[in-house]
Image (cartoon, rainbow, N blue to C red; front, side):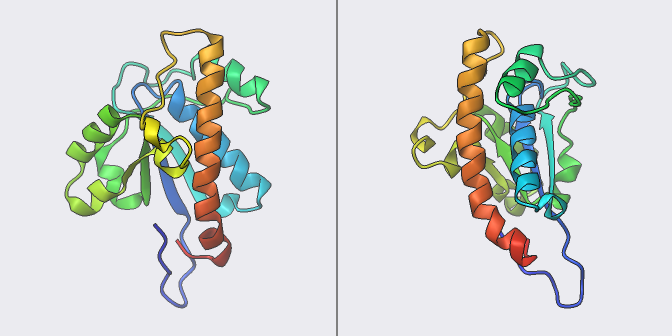
Length: 175
């Protein structure tokens, strides 16, 4: 996932896009969590973080209120989010595209222009060995507040594991 920048050039930030179905529950959670981790580590300028949806149902809407509430209970601010749909034309500019379930990963790989872009698509739970056998982060949309909290916990654990993998390269200025 990391690569060195050519000598003499300023390192570009590592670009991550979290993609779920509607961009109002799981992907905004991961975006907020990863941004907070990067800020706490003093690496916010080294990583560009965004989130998007495979579908267009919620474009322009804020995060689901239950998402905002779960984030707030965990000490995060999710109030600034606005949903958008993933644009396959962004693949070349992204270093990592993180899906939350196998259906989203399949859609994203189908949108990829070739093997290089397909390889950028990963499942979030792959990054946390204790959760990786589950493969999919459940969609809490049709559930209750407690499920949003459980999903956020899974996302925090996996996103923290992802950040632990990225942080050494970010500190060194490599992408």
